[in-house]
Image 1 (spheres, helix red, strand yellow):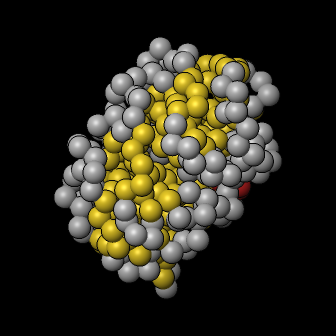
Image 2: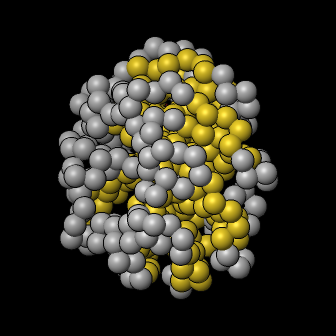
Length: 329
């Protein structure tokens, strides 16, 4: 029923559908820099934000009240993620560090160091035992969430690693990179798996499907692709300059961190209808900056130009509604 996201102005907005009207009130205006990432706690009670003003914040989802303003990073905070039990928050920043915070008290519990460049993404494994981090130093690191030590360094990318995602079972990890490739790893042993090629520019984000059989990527070539984990053939293009009809239902989790200098639209499209009927998402004509999908896989939102396009299922194609409110990227 709601979308919560941050923009380059530092405004955290909540898009709500009420009485056939989309509204976008500012949920929190405490941020003084661009918001890098937003994350809901698993129980939906809290929201965490990473901001380029140097702070991570924990807010009440219902009111936007800032519960904790987390101080510790030197420079911008690039990524935030809750642990599966919502007791811990992990953050990564441009200061090359990863920090763990107690959600209940707001206290820093641990600082993980080892990366040689800025952190691009942090996340917990599905069981909460591991923390994975990606960095501009071309590596992915896997840390013990309980022992606070680095267990494995995953090397293979030749350029910055932009994003990572765990498979639902936690046994695999995929990473996307500026080198135009996606790599799969065994998250327990660190052994490298297949390399996926198809994008013609930097791959900026990756996300697994809930069944773990497929994953999606998006890149600076303006394309959103779907891949079969069992094959390294070029992924089918779902968004972008090309399109491919696909059958079946493919809900997946959040895809983040697309190019932030493209156009400024957020588009919400009914995926299930479009995929089953091979519908071409031809309204996406510029660089996508961020993509997220509803938990049931029915609706997808992609950011590009200060307008929100909401698609509703209608024959023969979904209808479109535009939400206007943002003034910048």
